[in-house]
Amino acid sequence: MSCPPLLLHLRIPCDRTHIDIWLPWFLVYILLIPVVIIMLPILLLWAIVLIPCGKAQLLFIAVYYFWQVLVNLRGLKVDIDDGVRKILFSFV
Image 1 (cartoon, rainbow, N blue to C red):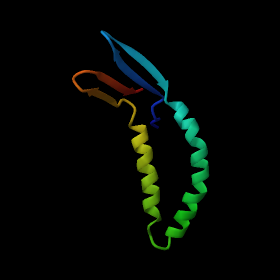
Image 2 (cartoon, helix red, strand yellow):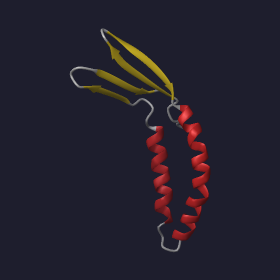
Image 3 (tube, helix red, strand yellow):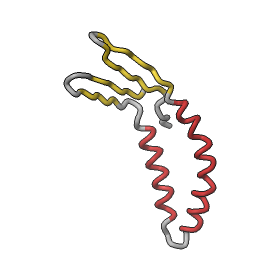
Protein backbone atom coordinates (compact mmCIF):
# COMPACT_ATOMS: atom_id res chain seq x y z
CA MET A 1 0.00 0.00 0.00
CA SER A 2 1.30 3.43 -0.87
CA CYS A 3 1.44 6.15 1.72
CA PRO A 4 1.37 9.92 1.24
CA PRO A 5 4.50 12.03 1.68
CA LEU A 6 5.53 12.91 5.22
CA LEU A 7 8.06 15.70 4.66
CA LEU A 8 8.34 18.74 2.43
CA HIS A 9 11.85 19.86 1.56
CA LEU A 10 12.26 23.51 0.58
CA ARG A 11 15.50 24.82 -0.90
CA ILE A 12 15.58 28.61 -0.94
CA PRO A 13 18.54 30.61 -2.27
CA CYS A 14 20.26 33.06 0.06
CA ASP A 15 23.09 35.08 -1.51
CA ARG A 16 25.61 32.52 -2.83
CA THR A 17 24.30 29.60 -0.81
CA HIS A 18 20.88 28.16 -0.15
CA ILE A 19 18.75 27.42 2.89
CA ASP A 20 17.31 23.92 3.28
CA ILE A 21 14.05 23.74 5.23
CA TRP A 22 12.43 20.43 6.12
CA LEU A 23 8.74 20.84 6.99
CA PRO A 24 6.77 18.02 8.64
CA TRP A 25 4.00 17.55 6.08
CA PHE A 26 2.33 14.88 8.25
CA LEU A 27 1.18 17.65 10.61
CA VAL A 28 -1.13 18.83 7.84
CA TYR A 29 -2.76 15.38 7.89
CA ILE A 30 -3.26 15.61 11.64
CA LEU A 31 -5.03 18.94 11.15
CA LEU A 32 -7.24 17.42 8.44
CA ILE A 33 -8.49 14.52 10.60
CA PRO A 34 -11.21 16.60 12.34
CA VAL A 35 -12.37 17.93 8.95
CA VAL A 36 -12.64 14.39 7.59
CA ILE A 37 -14.54 13.21 10.67
CA ILE A 38 -17.01 16.08 10.29
CA MET A 39 -17.41 15.55 6.52
CA LEU A 40 -17.80 11.75 6.64
CA PRO A 41 -21.47 11.66 7.80
CA ILE A 42 -22.33 14.36 5.26
CA LEU A 43 -20.68 12.40 2.44
CA LEU A 44 -22.40 9.17 3.47
CA LEU A 45 -25.79 10.90 3.64
CA TRP A 46 -25.14 12.46 0.24
CA ALA A 47 -24.24 9.04 -1.17
CA ILE A 48 -27.44 7.51 0.23
CA VAL A 49 -29.49 10.29 -1.36
CA LEU A 50 -27.72 9.81 -4.71
CA ILE A 51 -28.14 6.01 -4.83
CA PRO A 52 -31.61 6.15 -6.48
CA CYS A 53 -30.23 8.46 -9.17
CA GLY A 54 -27.30 6.13 -9.83
CA LYS A 55 -24.77 8.90 -9.12
CA ALA A 56 -23.40 7.68 -5.75
CA GLN A 57 -20.57 5.95 -7.58
CA LEU A 58 -19.22 9.35 -8.69
CA LEU A 59 -18.78 10.42 -5.08
CA PHE A 60 -16.71 7.34 -4.21
CA ILE A 61 -14.66 7.69 -7.39
CA ALA A 62 -13.89 11.32 -6.47
CA VAL A 63 -12.69 10.28 -3.00
CA TYR A 64 -10.56 7.53 -4.55
CA TYR A 65 -8.91 9.90 -7.04
CA PHE A 66 -8.28 12.50 -4.32
CA TRP A 67 -6.44 9.81 -2.33
CA GLN A 68 -4.45 8.79 -5.42
CA VAL A 69 -3.34 12.38 -6.03
CA LEU A 70 -2.29 12.71 -2.39
CA VAL A 71 -0.33 9.44 -2.42
CA ASN A 72 1.41 10.25 -5.70
CA LEU A 73 2.79 13.53 -4.36
CA ARG A 74 5.69 11.49 -2.95
CA GLY A 75 8.72 12.10 -5.13
CA LEU A 76 7.26 15.23 -6.75
CA LYS A 77 9.87 17.92 -7.32
CA VAL A 78 8.85 21.42 -8.31
CA ASP A 79 11.67 23.69 -9.46
CA ILE A 80 10.74 27.35 -9.79
CA ASP A 81 13.33 29.47 -11.60
CA ASP A 82 12.56 33.05 -12.59
CA GLY A 83 16.10 33.98 -13.61
CA VAL A 84 16.86 35.74 -10.34
CA ARG A 85 15.87 33.13 -7.77
CA LYS A 86 15.52 29.37 -7.84
CA ILE A 87 13.27 27.60 -5.33
CA LEU A 88 12.89 23.82 -5.08
CA PHE A 89 9.92 22.03 -3.47
CA SER A 90 10.38 18.32 -2.94
CA PHE A 91 7.92 15.93 -1.28
CA VAL A 92 9.65 13.09 0.59
